[in-house]
Image (cartoon, rainbow, N blue to C red; front, side):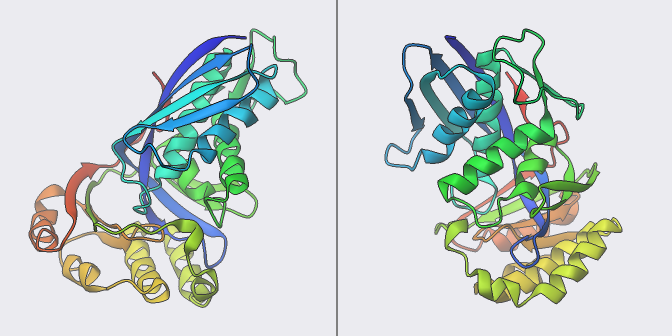
Length: 304
């Protein structure tokens, strides 16, 4: 089959980092990555390109295309190009957004419709079924598998992937790739992204595992719906584990509903209403890097 598909997926911020226990939580934010996939039945190779980053590692998006084609296609190769509003290696789930957008774009190029029902087509169904569908959680799992195989994640990042794919906030078991809870959160979101980058695969996992008791507490708070306090406890614990400063957290605490290191850093996210976040923005603007304001996103990844 020769076809073209295009999709977009949001970035996300962290409520609970999954590195300590395998349980994680994230929420989608209104900053997006877009993927365009062009399939070619005359080729079996997949070539990736990341706009504005000619030397970037494209194995993740290439593997996403390959896995979708293996499951739903007929050996097609092709090209995938991503462009993003999300800084790479900033802790804002850029890899999950790229993977989700690429998976949905490839499904679109193959004529496979993503579904909100957990009743998608099984891999044993042939590639020519005109009514083929795949449920959206399963589509996220394809991207998670690609991330593991490409070596860009330690946990598999199903928390990040599910929040980006489904929208809103999710709590997940990353060892079983299972959504434990999904909720709608309506926040303004303030982000501070320092100039340096931090790759998830380079995180000190052993040190993160030492804060497991705090991660268990964060999981309990998140499951109870106390997301703001969950974020803040997570931020303090993982700043200590990953050797990031706590000053951005302390500055935000009197004003924000919650504040945390996002992912394995280096970005920080604070949530609340815009007026309450204004003094936090003033303080974070004095730091080196970029401070920007966005909102939570509820619809998740979508074909375009």
